[in-house]
Image 1 (cartoon, rainbow, N blue to C red):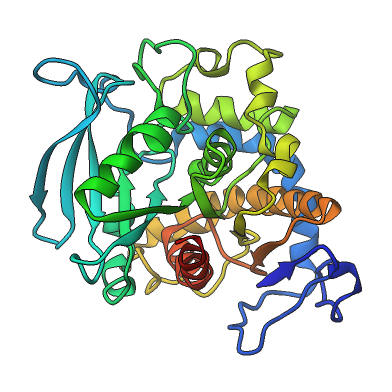
Image 2: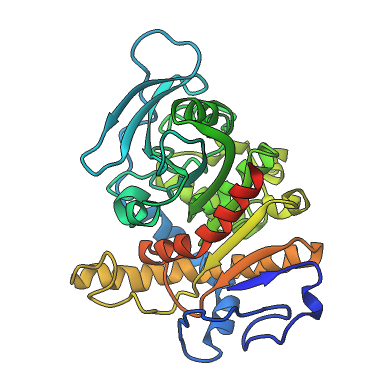
Length: 378
């Protein structure tokens, strides 16, 4: 893990394969790979983006049969319409969104002491929106990790292919998508009121949502004191970024023109965090990625593989290609933040793929940083 600060150009000696200013903390677990290959993959990542369009279009669960379903009963203000415990110990919270005129599912893991006030950590799922058993509460050990922590963990479900943003027009397939409004304006006060919140929040996301977390922070200044971006591409308006956005949205049957208009509509650049990186100053930032090379989890005994050779091949090949691209994206963002003198922590592994086992690792690595930021914000 490397920490970049405004004066990092004058800091400790660098690691092989990293740029100046990289500092390796004592006790860091080493994720080994062949020397020099990670550097090569950063260059290859630019070319792989073109190959990933068909992969993005076919990876993951099949699209659903339409957008959000209309809420039963009269419309009105956003509100919690139901809370029920799940057998797995996570609360199933049903929230009516006035912006989307639908009831959305939100999973909540309560803070250790429910009688005391607690900040919130929002964990956003990837392009599948948590469908197909692909959510934080199903794929990671969040119950164990947060068992003794004074924080409410909030996991919204839905938003497949939406980039968790406010769309300009309803989409014929994806329906009404107003996720920025829901996540930054409607949901936080409801969570705070129902679960004794302090009003202090952090947000982290994977893959598609690793872009969204930056966009949400820029759209709602002061809403989040910390954000985590695991295996994402922050650029949305350069040629590679536009291609990736259209591929992700199109995978779920949506039309990105309904999201930000036809290129070069101003919304594409307005939603490109790379172009507005200066506005991230003051937020605790954690960015992570692998290189796409097989790592310690690419084995038949690896997390989520369960001895299935087909899953292993998919994770190593498809997950490897996707991660090679996000590796290039992460280095581009690191260089931009370093130019601006904006402190950030970059966890750039020398291997690892686009898969849940590494994102669980990233959450473990970043949680102490988020916990400190949440404590300072109260």
